[in-house]
Image 1 (tube, rainbow, N blue to C red):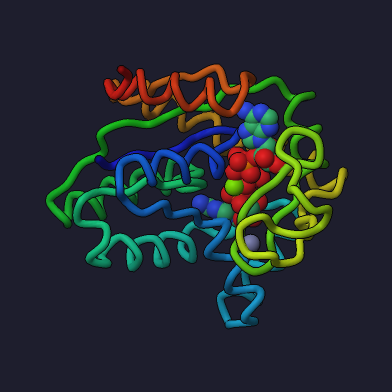
Image 2 (image 1 turned 135 degrees about the vertical axis):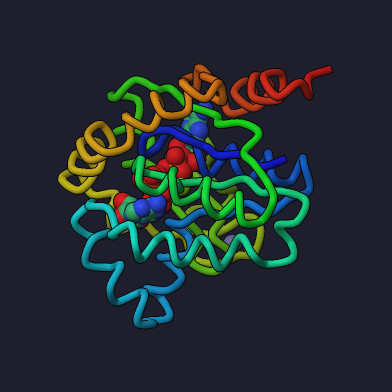
Amino acid sequence: MHLVMLGPPGSGKGTQGEMLAEDLQIPHIATGDIFRRAVKESTELGQKAQLYMNRGELVPDEVVVGIVSERLREPDCKKGFVLDGFPRTVGQAKALDEILLGLGEKLDGVILLKVEKEVLVGRLSGRRVCRRCGATYHVDYTPPRRMGRCDRCGGELYQRKDDGEETVRRRLDVHQGQTEPLQIYYRERGLLHTIDAGQSIERVFTDIREELGRGQ
Ligand code: AP5
Ligand code: MG
Ligand code: ZN
């Protein structure tokens, strides 16, 4: 299955995208994660992306599209993928259509996670991420067993640099301006599944599975 997770910062694209990919046995591909890894490794891409990410702005389309296009050609994507954080502009959506056309594939669905703005701010300010394996926690909703340490690998938990209040506000504005038009793009193509993502993590996951015809 070829799926896209759409939704504002903090809506749960990463949380649900990972669960869905595991369920479907396909890769979860998050452009934000790719960039954060590049920043950590201080590659040329990382240095370029960092400037935009720290401001809460989008990395230019031509940079992102090149990275995704390469990634989707990897053999593990043959059975499908869950894309998270891409596309983010109509230009990127058109580029994705082209990439898939070239691979003889097409999108099966777009999951739109809808959440109230106040809830998003609370989710982002309480998020903690494992430095080693990338697992995501929330200090109130999904706390780790041991404070500051990852349950999975024991790695150190940190707060993402772009989760500070000012950058969060900018990210939410950028989402509204540049990413919301995508909903129209996919609705017109009959691909959009809207999910109430303000519910518990488990409930949201059940609803997504039902939308995709995988409920019991
Ligand atoms: P990216 O990493 O994609 O960030 P984002 O879109 O802002 O989304 P987040 O990762 O912040 O939120 P999420 O929806 O994944 O929520 P999560 O599951 O973690 O992008 C970062 C930056 O990279 C961008 O700003 C841009 O600069 C650049 N970039 C990336 N892709 C790009 C592209 N295509 N084009 C251009 N630039 C690009 O959940 C959040 C928290 O809430 C967690 O703590 C979680 O535990 C908790 N939580 C989740 N669900 C629930 C629930 N149901 N109930 C309670 N808590 C919950
Ligand atoms: Mg994410
Ligand atoms: Zn870890």
